[in-house]
Amino acid sequence: MRSMQQVARDVEHAHVSQMFYPLMQSLDIAHMKLDIAYGGIEQRKIHMVAREELPKLGYKAPTCVHTPLIVSLKGPGNKMSSSLPETMIMVDDSPEVIEKKMNKAYCTAEDVEGNPVLQIARYIIFPRLGKLKAERPEKYGGDLSFKTYEELEDSFKKGDLHPADLKKAVSGAMSDYLKPLRTYFEENSDVVKLKKKLFNL
Image (cartoon, rainbow, N blue to C red; front, side, top):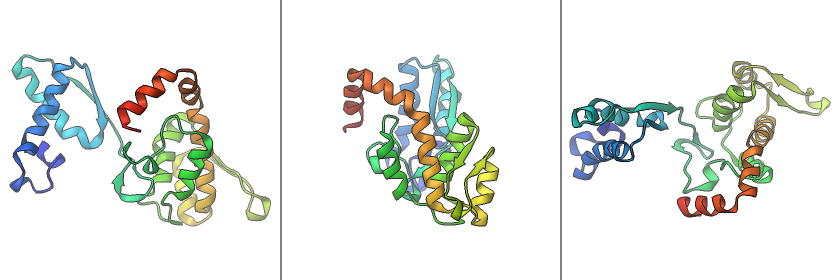
């Protein structure tokens, strides 16, 4: 029943298909002979079914790795989805596309709750790059440099960092971080074709 909460909002009146889904996903892990089940944190309960029940059927319990769930660029109540490119940053997006998407992203001044731009900084930029710089003209206070996410959040919450400056900084950092992946896609057209086929682009 724990895993049902991931596929049915009303557990007491769930459809039969929703009851089977956690089991089918668990068996997918077994039949693909996966050592590691990787997914967003919302998959945790379903993965726990796999860990607890698969050994009873003679399969190995998978190691489960979960990532934080980043909300849609459109704002709270949604998650990034490959079927809606405007809601997420694709790994091969050009700097221009990243900037365009980021400029349209939900980012209310001084509000840190459900802010996708801050979440990208928190879960992607700081763990990998360890810093973030917001470049601003001197008349607007000059550049701001942040060594930790906490510093960034505090500055934004106080109103010292404007949403437009945050978006520009995060957009630039994401473009730099994704450059090796863009290069890989540019040099491997077969991978691009496979990506388009997988995501129906």
